Length: 266
Image (spheres, rainbow, N blue to C red):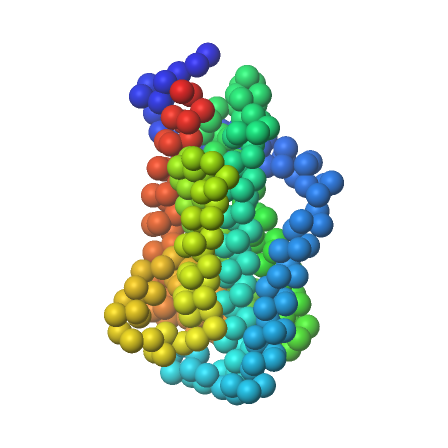
């Protein structure tokens, strides 16, 4: 039975969302090398910038005034970026294909699945994918000797939160895309955010107006969260980042579910 978006209450109850996750798990049994590629990308950045340039840079300010080696500074930022990219790729590139070329959701909605369950299932799958990539990256940097505390395991729930936030943002974005050419606009936002959100440089190297802009970016708070967890500094940085990402992700998810409802029901 078809319902218009105006008649459908927007709630975030999971419903049959796990069915969507299970469906994606079955698909990825045959395309798992794609996830391996997402693990290797941050590793290449770590080797090129963290280890290569790190030998020239030496130590940089971490959080709370502590000084850390450059690889220890870059590694948690790359981990946050990996969680972000994994989640965003799933709810933008992959979901767009299912929405347009494959018509996957039209078929799924002929079953008892609701649009809300589809949306929540895709977000759950995206954050699981981001967490998987981040966990694998954490294991590798541990072998490289960059992890010094068992508290670094808290990076896994941190990656889940980051994945949730960016998967929800991606859910909004995919409902706004007009065609494949709009993916260039996504890159136009993602690339500068990756470069400037303290991934490779401390915040204090920028002029104050640029610092204010950087502090608004969700990737900046994602990096603050993983860096605070990775370095075991905790404190105010961690609290602000958790509240910011949870609030942004929840609002984006509510908006994304509503917009996907309109997209699929009209």
